[in-house]
Amino acid sequence: MSRKLSDRRGQGHKRSRKGVRTLALVAALAVGGGGTAIVAANASAGNHSPAPRTAAQPSTGPAQVAAKGPRTINCPDAGERLRDVPEASKRAVAAHLARLDAQVAAAYHRLAKGRSSERAVLAKLKRSRSHSLDRINRAITRAGGQAPELRSLRVCTVKKKWPLPDSTRPAAQPTLPAPPDGAPPQGGPVPEDFVDITSVQPVAAGPAPGGNASTGTFVSRCGTNERGHFNSDNVIVAPGVSNGAHHVHDYVGNVSTDAFSTEESLAAAETTCTNGDRSSHYWPVLRSLSEGDAGAQARGPGADEPGNAPDGNVGRILQPAEVSLTFRGSPVSKVTAMPRFLRIITGDAKAFTNGTANANASWSCTGFEDRQLTDRYPICPQGSKVVRTFAFQSCWDGRNTDSANHRTHVSFAGPDGNCGPGFTAIPQLVQRIVYDIPPGTAFALDSFPEQLHKPVTDHGDFVNVMDDRLMRKAVKCINSGRNCG
Image (cartoon, rainbow, N blue to C red; front, side, top):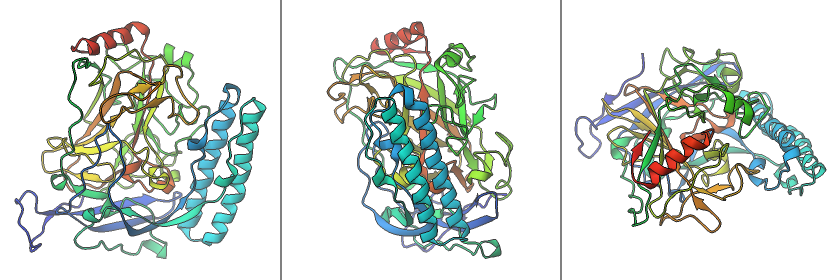
């Protein structure tokens, strides 16, 4: 049974009976398949979150203050630095980047278990990172590319504090009880990761459509992963690498997607989409962490398989109640067709340590979707459901279906709705995933171990495998102002 919201009185202000409640969060995280640390505390429903950016218009984050929390490993992201990776070296570079992720995860586990000093953990990590970074440079130069400066990325630090918006701090600071067997507290989520959606300010509306706007939509109906297609791969970031994500993904659309998929295999595969769209859509699973669910695994791979408990992801995997995949237009122009096999990632799986420059996924509740969160999980009122929204980049460079860091070939439109120089508007994909989670149920998304299940690390992935006929139909619907699908 999950811990439920209880009444809270005497807080110096009045709210509706519906809103004056406190969440007792019970969050569990298994580290390295070992013991479970329990975090139980109060998260005030009276807290307020600064209005975040809209999903389609990233901007800088709110004012921050330091807050204590579990230690984690903070390493510079080598993948973000890459700009020139020749085709012949892409698989080798992806394999070495995956090794860097595995090294960070292993260092985090050693640190969390407390069997090595911070200094020893970081020294060993620096040595292993040096070898992998050198191999990335060699793979690029041997294939005729220009070696990036990566040696400066060898050094990692231990992160003991993280930014926490002051206005979302609980009125009473949470208490973290001692974990079993004297083990150190392990990572997240923590009570401060949750906020009452009714206390969040609405976001500003985007630009109004102009005279040349493309106001139509095209919808692909692809189900809610009823077939149980899961894996901890990432064919965009880590092609050819098993468990390249270190967390489990939910998939809809293309039924064959894994680390070893090729354009040919994706084009030949079946799909769950009713319109024949073979595109691949995936995102980290969401898990219930309530009492009784911490060790449950009703859906997905076995608890002891990669991406699950060995990578610090535990709890019952939740099936979405609804998944909508909508392609929409531009407020200032017509859109052009996406190229087949275009790959786009929105959000950043490492935003907790990388910073929020690429954090774009947002959280809300049905009935409150004018209020969006990027760095907090929402506490939804009775009768309201949790909503994750991924609004993808809608500007394309007109040439590339991917880029070395998987970002620079696409971009977001500016605040006025226009694409930057050299970029053209394409249909904007919006993935919207809805979960029926009872109020008071603790939950968290899967993440890389060192990212501590922070909501800011949420992200969506998309590989366009629409055939040309279906893409032309989508563009025609969007540009003509019709709603199709």
